[in-house]
Length: 291
Image (cartoon, rainbow, N blue to C red; front, side):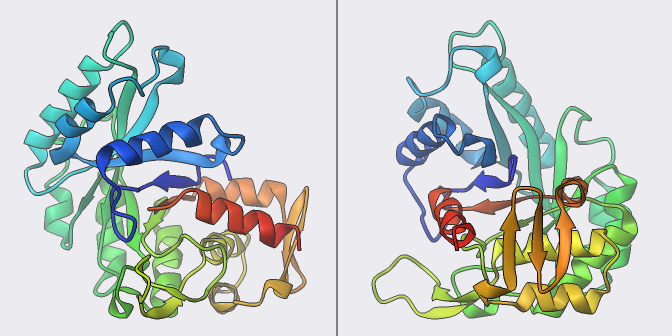
């Protein structure tokens, strides 16, 4: 679970105000579940707003610096300049609070667009490139691997049509494995298990079939352990809590056991997921593992 949940509280369906999202993150950093907390996700265009609203919240010690992931739009060079300036303002010795942007996330839909990023993003930043799950995924992932980047898949949203098919998700993970490209996922994953859930937090929100993050990362671990893609697909689509058993040193799904070491190995490949909630995925998993 280490660093598994990147907090995206600024984004739908939570869509928190900046100060509230930052206060939430400060609370999570200090909680007993902090080890599962990943980065605070913020668009580059809102960095100045974040700095204003983060007064009194950012840590003063460099060892406790918040780690951030910045979302980049079309003008990548300008975004990199803003990121580097931000990092200088909040580096060790600064009195403005300690934070570092060490991850960037951006979108690209063609091999040419991905190749054009070569040399633009400095090696000090880990980059995730979100790609469509349709089309020539192998070519896109080969290009991502060629520039030393990682891949990103969008697994949902606030409308039913935002969710890719289960087969498309598995095909993406298999292709990442084949290309040796690590990946993260985002959207629609704030529940551990697949099921029918409200798509937003509005009282009359429609429901839709959402993926569970446990399903996604278990499917990746099964593939990493050598299981067939059809087995991983079945794990991805399983919504029965009784199919899963948890021990201190393993997870078992329908008779298939994944040891702690196998799960750790898979986490080098299946990195994290973005969620507009941190407590919801963590608290629901705690309930699930207690049986």
